[in-house]
Length: 342
Image (cartoon, rainbow, N blue to C red):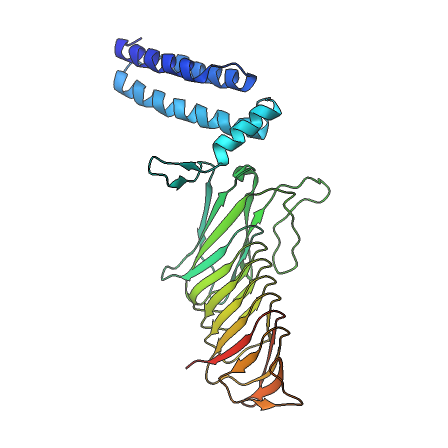
């Protein structure tokens, strides 16, 4: 074995033995794996290349061992597992005192062409969905996974390319084999996490002439000026969207702020929340039958509205223009604002 390389191994092994103190089963297994890599690396003869390879293998084995202690590949006690989880997933401080995210984050990327007029559908459970316009010819989706307790690798990102566009889902592991979580196209979708705390944040870069359907449960939905239609839904989170087409949006705990560029809608548009206000910016040429109601809040509009029946500051049934389209806005705790754009 090359003398400088042997010396390098010896120094590192001595330090590792002193710091590791392999008393528990998990620590012993980790220590043995690292030694096995050292033995394998000892067959390399060129010192500079061997040292590089040694460092690479050492890092890989340490990472592999830490992750597999959590996933059950190595048998460890509950106390040992808890200690490893804290070391891996709790933020730690740098010398300057700034928090650093633990190295448990995982990233998924997908890119592909979607025909004009089709829809890019994103489905998550825990995490935000953010979309921005792109001048590229392909859609790009980035999913960043992170957690404090659970293993991010357990959450898969599934892609379904279909006639209507593409659907991309965060699929969590199921504890019930008879009810597996699946990725499905469209709004009829059921999934669960079983206390898995992995958060998946989606970033979507959307070319022109494509639509977006963004669905999550615990997270926000936000877009730039998308050159298409937007359908946004969440439960615990706000919605802030901007589209040159039309918009529909529903949440429960959060506000809705939406801007639309189209005054011609092929369907009735609904904006609903429970705890939060609704602010909707509509084109000046809008023509719609409007139903707006709130309980704890008020209603205001920049448009001249022909009122039907009784009018109050908390309920309004009226017509903008000739009433060609249908528009519904409902909240319980929050105000409703109709703004007139250009």
